[in-house]
Image 1 (cartoon, rainbow, N blue to C red):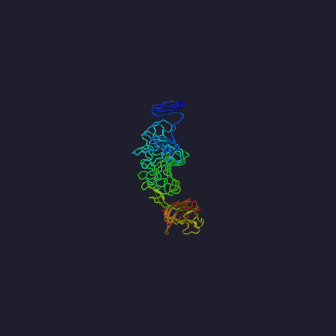
Image 2: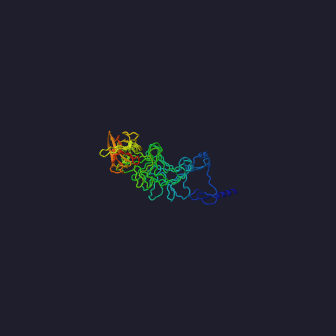
Image 3: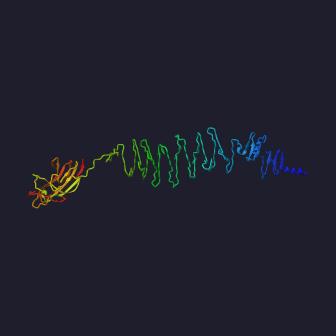
Length: 530
């Protein structure tokens, strides 16, 4: 009787029977009305039947919804009426469409896949359908946050067989934020674009806009950087950079440095080609245009070949303009050839009234031909004795000079002690215009006056003698003792030129010439040949 009473007490403490609901607790509370079995505890859990995998699969005719804990897989299994399902790997289903709102600082929905498949996959087969959407309406929020921490891992990978792999759009005209912003704090590339189809002719990257700003703007803010802000390498035969503008500049380079760097710099390190090429086909346009307020508009440097090469089929190949400075300044050799410039050895560059320059052959330079003979040979001898001869019976005596001051062209034959037909005679080397000067002075007359003194420059051509130039003094005076003559004459090569003198005095006596270099001389030079 005591055992029965004790058993009844225990069962009553553990079970509170309320109609058909069963409550198991230690506080005597009733079961929830909607629950057939209500188990409550703050210190203990619920233990369902524990079986091995073999025991689980050996259960005869398991009921739909039967639950067991598999001690080998360490997971809860449920029988769905046809097979056992692992609740850990199979999960549960969601009724679609599904919507839920939470307020949490951690992930509201998290799935971890330790395999190689996708943790979450969204797909749509409808036209213009969306496989997956991520959005945020909060200020400073992130519509999609992707994170990777493994070597070679990719936070976001987009793949397309036929459509666009990645597409971004800003529908708010008032939005001034950046549509795509990439921040790289590592040492690798921030972005990489590669078109692997080697037969494609499409652009690898295309930027298009209908706005008023730049299509592409690149900043390099590291002052210690020595690399290019933009570097393009082309392994093919195409252009490294090609820029086209319908109204403005195709390429415009601006530099604001005081260290001498160029706004545009082109360099060719190969064996052919050009560092910078500009091409223009329309009238009044330029292939390459440089503008400078105070410095150099275009500067070119070449080590072994042409620093600048300009070609034109009809217009101006190279044009320079300056208001106050130099339109063209060259420090080094200059070569001008081609077209109708007609370069040739010895030619000089001349222009017409419009400034069109060509090479022209100039007349041969005037040869250096000049001489001067001075002093009287045999000053006190018979050779220097000039007979008195009246004007009505003139007798002009040839003057023999003693020394040569100079003789460019070696045309003058000096007196060598014996008077001949060629001594003190100048032989004309080339046809041309010549200038001659001659001056003679007689010794002072004491007992008689000179009435006539006449000096002549004589010409011998083809065996005939004639007077080229003549000048005289006709005054009866003891002071009348000198005469000089000068003038320009045209001569032929081979002509012979000499100086002759005549004097007449009242005593009809011979007279001697003074042996002075400054007053007795004969000189001449070629003005120009023709």
